[in-house]
Image 1 (cartoon, rainbow, N blue to C red):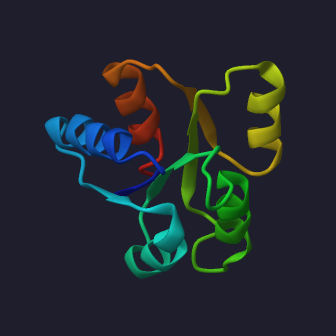
Image 2: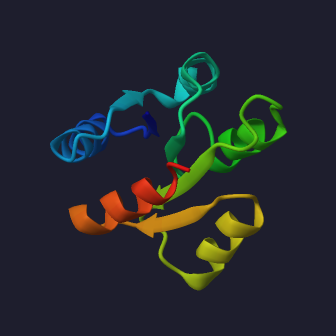
Length: 117
């Protein structure tokens, strides 16, 4: 299962549809209750936006990495921040992968499938 955390409802919907077309089970959640959902569902992969108004994706990533039940979850940062500094910051903070908007469905699917170990 993939959990999608993004503050934009349209992006959440698009990502769920893209993954569903590839027979990948996905559920989109609002950032405000994302950790509760991630703990309850224990997904193999989390697609995590970085820049959200209510909470930083980096904060959610830190919570995932510090939780003994979730620390091995494959986390892909999904963001419009494409600079090398942002990519490096995400990877240094514990993200497993990083994809920038806009992206192709093929690229997203390949990256998500890497997370299913």
